[in-house]
Image (cartoon, rainbow, N blue to C red; front, side, top):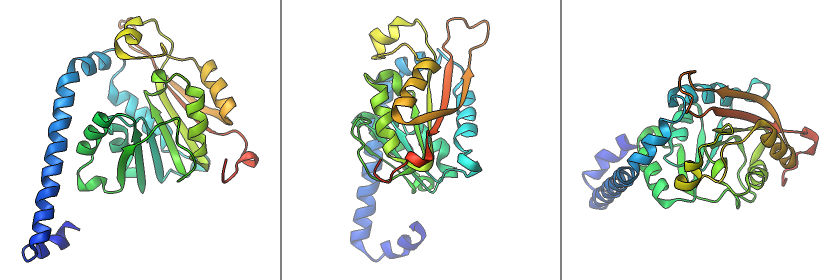
Length: 246
């Protein structure tokens, strides 16, 4: 697209003006993102230091998320609570379409800045609430990465997520196993200090989902104060129970 527009832009002042405006918007988003991270840098760094390396988590996420039901890789993905858009960036090379939703306009600004490159033209983010997904476009893969521990009712969020899942689609949850770090509740708005597979299975069951794979990434033995990251993969519990307007 850029290759086509550049020759035209030399003769069309409106295109020149539009391109300048687009660049200004991107620069504004980038600055807003930088300011936001600067204000929260200490918090982000502290959170990252509490669990295993992000690279290790992302490696397992790709391994679990890209093997769809019956071995068919997902082509479309919905990232709920997309935050910085990192998970969209991670999966983007393997997707035909990706959508990220978040309730935070600050986080959406960060995500838009991160996804401004032409390599992410098939990716978009927008404002949205996990409790108000309703009916609409269905996806092959839905991800909730470090989202459930912020929610008052994770089960309700999963029931809404299932409504946007293709018949052969899967939901991947990445979160913390149960822990005792109270400061995360007090200082970082965590409503839950992790969650167990028993809890996850209960929410899955109520949502009409079933667990098909789980993976635990525990910290090194010497890092006793670190958190264990858990990954749970689910799909429709009963194909016969799938309805187009589920």
